[in-house]
Amino acid sequence: AKTVVIAYEPIWAIGTGVTATTEQAEEVCAGIRACIAEIYDEATAEAIRIQYGGSVNGANAAELFAQADIDGGLVGGASLVPEKFIKIMEQSGDIRWVGEWGIENMIRCQQDLLEKHPEMPMVFSLNLSTKQLVNVELANNLIDIARRYNVDPKTIMFEINDFIVYEKIGTIKTNVLKLKDFGFKIAVDGFVLDGYSVQTIQRSPIDVIKLGRSFLTNIDSNYTKEIFCII
Image 1 (spheres, helix red, strand yellow):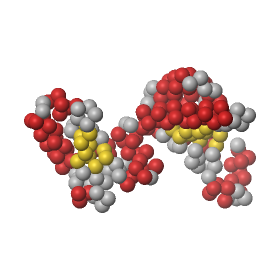
Image 2 (spheres, one colour):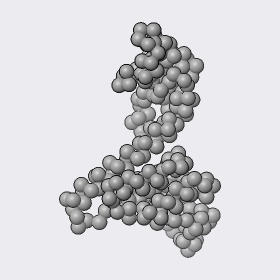
Image 3 (cartoon, helix red, strand yellow):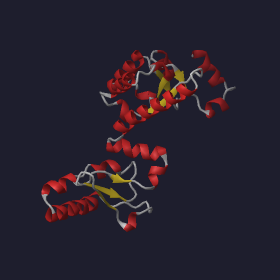
Image 4 (spheres, helix red, strand yellow):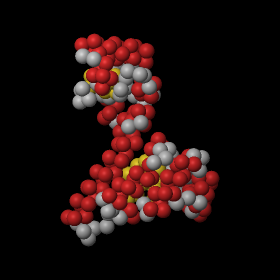
């Protein structure tokens, strides 16, 4: 039974952007579980994963997945857009194991390339979302993975999207400091430059600031020049 997944997806919700209410979705999924219990037994019904599908997105995933008889989502169009899919994974909590799976696969890929091109210096990067960074075990888990594969931490860079929360949430700051102390490189991605954030950067364990094209477009502006002077 643990290998069986049943998905409930209303025909009228497929690709329409219309989602069943949480009450509707829970009622049907609970009914499916009750039918399984009647045909087989309670243990089998509890072991089977029942998912809801039909316009699942980052805005409704948390409420849907919080229902007692909904064990996850069957995600369609939103899974084709990384930003949308990541938001759904964050709401479901799956972003935690997906992040660890991601670094393991990245390290394997890195090691394969280094074996073929040992003379080529390589630094691989991986984004860490706010939801991942608030996991108290994140840094320890990533460090354990690096040790397991005997990888040089200086060849891996973690990118932080929402740097503004760095000093506001203690768990995030602790994770970043642990990762930095172990030897990983830390980058700020999607960084919005202003006087306050630049001062915060100077007090933080940041190795790289990734600048977007919009910043380079305004490279000759007086404001941009002032920011560079501060840096």
